[in-house]
Image (tube, rainbow, N blue to C red):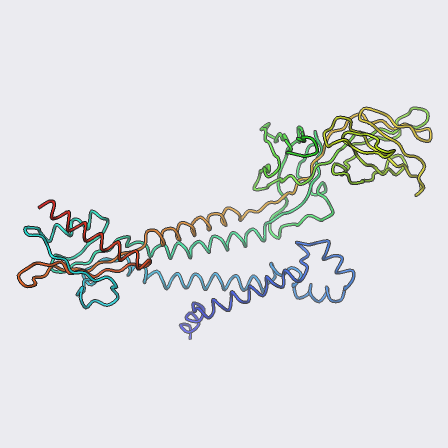
Length: 453
């Protein structure tokens, strides 16, 4: 009974079944909104169809990639892979062994697609031919009366390495799925970040790991410098100082990496220091307001009981009576503000950098205009194992395709008073190329012996 179970668990039928079921799981994960991946879509769906989503939640179909069913399938996939490797190891060991039992008749030996018979030059020694084959990288057993030669005899080991790579890839994927943290954090120039969970954006909510906590990081954004030529943003230079005083740089496609965590630049905004004074000149309120306006969008903020709608113009100009920008270079940066109170618009105006705007007796000052950046924060602890697995798989494939196995059986025989080398040969791949290779090989070996004689 136990042997039957092991046989089924290691069978190709069971492998296909597991792959098919995992494929179905992944398709369901695409069709059903996953609450850890597409939170906004999931919560909207839950509000519109609460009963349906409750049933799917109970069946773990809204967190299908980490559900007990998926874990069980992955477990059996590992078991299947391990059993296949365990059964193949004796076969691999047998294939890489080189013994006289492999010596066979080159004329009648089965499985050899290349056959040849070559007359030996006068005075040549048959043993010299075998030495020449060794020089060409072949390992040999036997004598001139019958020998077996193999090149790249360890190539079957690449099969085991290829399957081993799946363990690394799958293990890395499982570790990543259970330890991955994803979030967004907005940080202004000069702002420190200690990795506090409450500092991460709530839209979307951070994706918390099943195992472990949030990234432990500590750094200060020292400076943010956008690079713009004409109307074209060309890059951004973000300087970061870590808790040990180390200096780092980040930019487009160049994340800051610490504690297995990548801080990837996603967006640029402005965080002007705005101070509101009442009619007596007393400071009523003040703050660095992180405004997402760098791409021409409108943003809002509240201060001192007023609501403000803000637009930003990097090189402000009035064209046909309308606010505009000459280009995207920060030569004349201003904000246009629409001011509301209790839902009613009461004023509008222009607030330039280091300038003021008066309305309804109040005065608004912009004392500084630093930038802020939005980082996409992701920590994946299993990524190193995944990369290792792909590296092992690549090495195994290259090994199998380039350093493929060649085998030769041969013997020196007397025919009509003349000595002849009778051989049969085969290779794992590239039959036509192998035939050309063997033809050249024996021609070179025999010509070499003739020249030496």
